Image 1: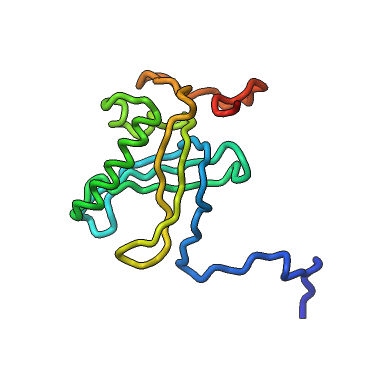
Image 2: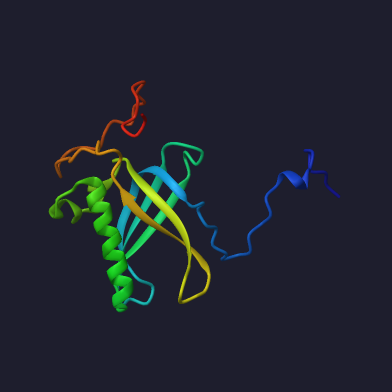
Length: 163
């Protein structure tokens, strides 16, 4: 027999989610920066998606990660149309020109507003997250494609999205 070595209080521990169950991100508006991105093939190999990992940088979910997958090449026209619309909303939020969107790393470290919602999937009937992208009070700069990412050093000045 072995002792835990700490006080166990089950009411202070979240219930385990069944394997494979998707945990939804709470609906709301968040300020985030892309910290990782890639273009990947779909599991069935019939399309490609843009993967973006967002880090929330302000508010109650600060530090949380939200992942988006935009099926920009898909055999289902509706899925492709929605994904390309989402990618376009990201471009508008960043105030980028078309050529700046060819390389996903160009979107990194630039704050944007993520409007995350929850909806019921027509195909699976399960609840899922969706996101739309918006500029932050028109203060998002248009960086040149060759510009290095902003410094990671903290600043005492207000952030562009703070009023």
